[in-house]
Length: 256
Image (cartoon, rainbow, N blue to C red):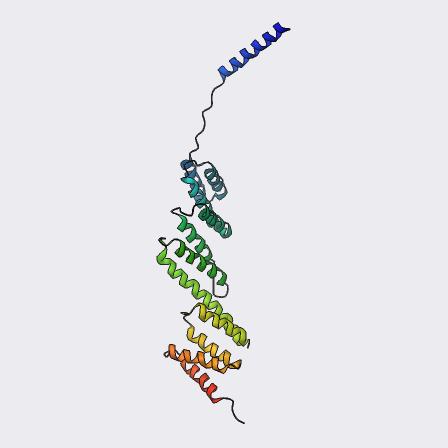
């Protein structure tokens, strides 16, 4: 039995030796992040976004140089913009900023977030939400990235956001005024003055406040806003209306 056991062991060793001699050693494949990134960009340019993102995710996981991983995260967000998926794009841009806050393209990611909301602005009636979000993101861009390359255009877009938001408050205030909901109208117009003191329709806001306060029985407040209109905007076309309102306040109720 011992002889048989020894023969079996020798046979096994010879078999394994012969197998190892025939097997070829497969070289370890080196992942080329640069080549893969170029391939993903090519796919994205041909609108093959899902395939592109699959490669970009692989780059994020396998790029040992750490050069293309951040760019891949950014490009994932860009593909969602091109695919008209704004919510997903915002989420991916925010992820980029969280993962790489000091990256040279962090200001670009923040700018893209602001522009996604800015592009949702349609009109004063429906654009308030988009304008408010865009304004907050533009202000964050200016605050967190003081040397961002978008400074010149940002101020113009901030002004547009503020104008749209102010227009919305103005329209709602006028709606309440026409509905004779004077308290609600006063609240809207006074909020507008505090939030947007440089609003282009300020003379009309002051006149509306004068009217709303007069009709709600607050004569002193009415006179205060009408006087401010006359003092601050003497060349406004609304001056005659303000003077008429003031005259009616001073005259008091008509005697029978």
